[in-house]
Length: 383
Image (cartoon, rainbow, N blue to C red):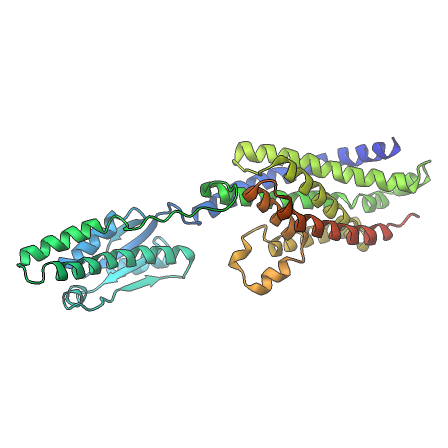
């Protein structure tokens, strides 16, 4: 009962901070989730400027193909204006087609085009692939017409060329990528991942920040009164740990419900999520005890907690997928609890309740918990 009284007092004292952090988590999820979803490919449309010096024959077919491409939004303009739009980032790139384009294709040579860009990105690469696809469509149509109407009239050649050009609009092979396991739809995966990542980070901030309650009590002079009360040290420690755990679970529950209703974030199997979240909260509480034990003042603990959580969240892959970083950074990420928590949540989201897949994340988080807890508790000063 005495532990429950201590826990209740700490939880109620942290309620204002709890709601502020939850609001930030939902806002960050909404903003970054939409950004990541927009930049992840899918049905994205790319703005390009087209500088067309050649205005007939094959160049005209290229222009028409680019204009009809559903992945491209084309603006035909002059070179000076195109360069200006690229510099101002109004368009992703500018395509320059000079008057040698038609001649090269007529002579069965590979045509040369120039792409003007400000900086390379995944979006630039995707847009360039669409442009190359349209040029390839024309070269294939020319090759097919040369074979089909080699001995025919010019009219027969044009007919074969036009028919091939039209048929090439439909891909000869349809490829369907199927993710093994019960994965969520691709359209929502980025939002789910961002929502889970920011939930993990902000829950960690809440729990670790709250773990500085002992330092706060000492600053306000109430720690001595707690120690002189007829309560065992075990009950005191238990009360504070229970309060941190309750705060973490309260925030997690609200964020999961609010994230589902506001941002449409999925988490997967509830039992797997509950078990992994419990282990992760214990790990976060233990890390908070370590920071509280090292810091000399409550203000130091708050500053160090925010810095540590933010830095390790970036390294651990909560802000972005680790696939985009090099092997060295991926190895460093494995030294953070956030990496293993995110790995576990992604396993649940993709494969459901698979104990074999969850075994490693849970065991590693438990190992972190034991090490952090033993060190953190040993640093609590009972005087």
